[in-house]
View 1 (tube, rainbow, N blue to C red):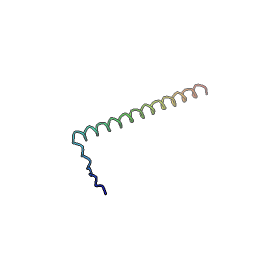
View 2: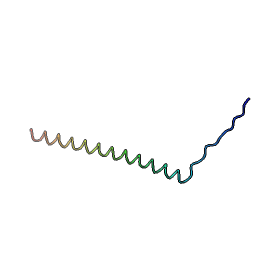
View 3: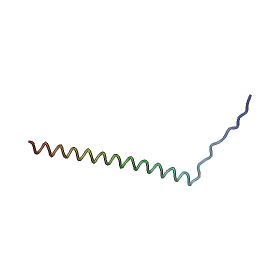
View 4: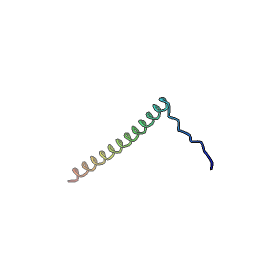
Length: 57
């Protein structure tokens, strides 16, 4: 039988935790910006359709 050493993962330092939290926040913010741009693009398209339908009626 072979005995292997069990290693306990090191806990990140407070600085590393802060950086990781900042990176997660940046990623969430980027997704929020992307979603907002998509929402605005859809709204502009809907407004354009409403305008086109009202002028042809």
